[in-house]
Image 1 (tube, rainbow, N blue to C red):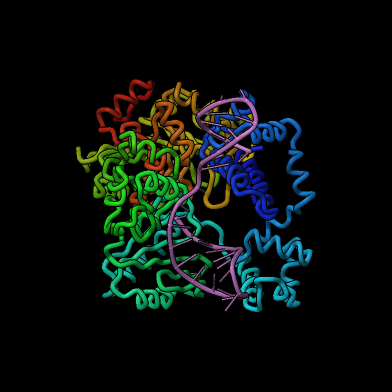
Image 2 (image 1 turned 90 degrees about the horizontal axis):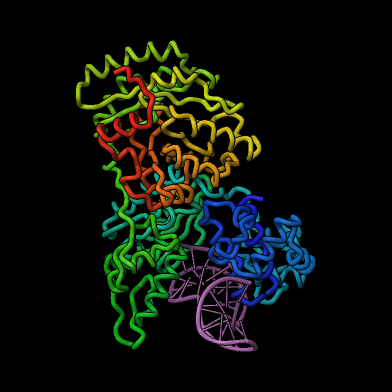
Length: 580
DNA sequence: TAGTAGTGACTAACATTTGCCCACAAATG
């Protein structure tokens, strides 16, 4: 029973309680507990084992008891009782657009509808229009909604959404009646995956801008359109929405649209405590005096007595409290990365030569580049034999000679952690390298104990400096290995190993939650492109985003270190005999 | 239901737009 499964169970309970019509605070309690768990890098099972369930934010006595039952007996009586009352299959109806808890309860109680197929049949037979508050139009919308369910894509990786967002933004910014347009929502907060695109524009003519927006060539359907916002479906099923506001309201509007919902609720509570009501339009004094318009986000935060909070932190994970205490973290910026320590070349499965990689790295301002081609054990990628490493060393030296002091090239390898837990190179081969990345690629579905032990073995090898993309996950769909981070993180800390934040937007591995936990423990992290082509060297900003979301101090990112410090760290870790 | 204040009670998650039906549910951050 992993955290994700527990979150789903708690949300199921909340959904069913909502359909049942329970008091809102009970429902919120389950949702809050689910949120609290989502912010934990540790497994809930660990808390349970240690008798610490109630230390999880949002988990109190009642939910702790239910989790205890879940771990002990594999089920929760309360949930069984609940599903006897309210069929669990009703949860699926909530995913139909325009079907909320009230309408689900209505069709269930009045028509006996318990699942999607029955809902569709009832709509087709014109039964929905017989219900109070529903008519022919609602019926049509619900049928369309059911049809849309199958083609509607789920969350998509950030890196896939950003180009679309940029295209829409450029389109809006080119309109004469648009004075400003920005990306908002989870994409601005740089979440690893996003559900829809949120855009905000400051405009002098709302009607025309909204019309232009819904007329964009990529728009396949208009989901909704009013005086201040419009929502559309784009090619491929991605949804986008645009809010338009007068320029003097842009600050409150952008702040609102950026979210997260939890962060906004926190800010609005803060506003109320100071005698204001905060909305996307203005900060309105409760004493009836004139609303205060904010053209910038900084003004909004300033009126609330807070410093501006970077979007990446706005997840209601303690940032408002930290801001109040003057303890917001100093965040990493892309320009602070001066090395890339995990890149590939044509010596394994890369598509660019060492020289091409080095030239591009230097152009981008990097001072250090490690060429980390795969080891031979990973059959699919033309990995290097020990002999090939020696050959490659000649080439690295030649390119180094050509580039002089402008960039330092390091001899490295991404060593496979084999299915049996052994590294792909013997220690004497590893010792020849300047820096070693060890990664899992195969047998990622091994049982928790086995794959954890495998990674621990790599962490404890004194030649290993960085663990590459630790979990091996692929966004949006392939989960990472079932690693026991409660063993991995302390072991990595003890060994002084840096854990990678792989900047490939399909990986972003470690994720923000685990990276934050490791950083809080004092661990080192490394942001690398894992580039297989010189064009991909530029994508480390996605990794920077993860580090920012993880509150990591720049100094704990070894890629911010200069050559002297990095080499010093490597030499203290031992046992590399540089090819020089 | 959680959290807190204080052992049984009280408070807590904000503010808005849209659309369909004729007041309200759903959806948005």
